Structures are given as C-alpha cells and as structure tokens.
Length: 182
Image (cartoon, rainbow, N blue to C red):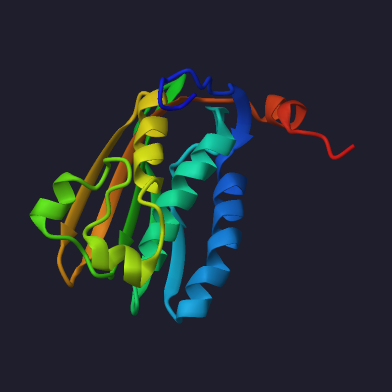
C-alpha cells in the first residue's frame, strides 16, 4: 500500500509528548544495551495536541532513531522537536535525530533513501537490517506532506531532519480520540 501511496493516514487528535515518550521508552533499552546515551528534547514552544496520525509518526521516529542507535557505538543519539512555524491552526514541526555514529560518505548519502540500499555490503554484515527502514520512512514523510534532509560526515555522525506540517488539535478531543483499552 505504501509503495503505491494507497496508505491513508489517520486524522485524530493526539498528544505529541505522549507519542514521543512511547518512542523513547521503546528505544531506551537499545541504547542502554550499547552503552550510548539517548536524549529526547522538546522545545517548550512546541504545541502538544496535534491532528494527525500518531502511529505513523511513531513509525518514522522509531525507524530513524533505531538506525541512529544501530550505527552509533559510542556517544549519543539525540532526538529533538521544535516548531519552525506556528499559526492559529497549523504548526510546522522539525524533528532532528542526530548521532555520533559512523556517518556516511557523500556517495553513500545519495542512496540512503533507496529501497534495499545500505552503505555497502559490509554495513549489512556488521550492523544487520534490510535497508528498507529509511525508504519506508521517506514515503511516510511524503504522505505527511513533509520533507527530509540528511547531513552526515564519515566517522563523525549523521543528522536526519524531518519537517512535517500538522493542524493543531484540541485537548478535549484528544481524550475522545484516544483508543480505549476495553
């Protein structure tokens, strides 16, 4: 479905910080196993209630953050969120996932979002994975009418910057839209 852009995004009120906490809780054990720090920083001006697909946002952040953890042997993976623009009804948010990992050469950087691409054969032998995560993530970002950029330097680290526009949600509706545990 995603390949053909047939996947439809949900439009529900959700609490951004709760979604980020869930991603952090999932990623923390991976980082701890490798002995690296994982930090999540949310700018105080970031709206908390948005209208959109929290599950797809989680998928994107999990894909990118787990890659950052996978390719970082020492140091830190930092996930930060800040508003680039906020109006009465919309917010354009920037999600930055930066690491102190192995980084990529300019040649490898060009192919990073292609399906089944990894930096080279030794990458998949050393670190595992299918090479599908970033391809899927890019398609999800495009479905959100967002953009993604990658900045990387070999042996220094990588930063992935995702910008996504979200309509602002309402707190009273966020409680109504939350899936029930019944």
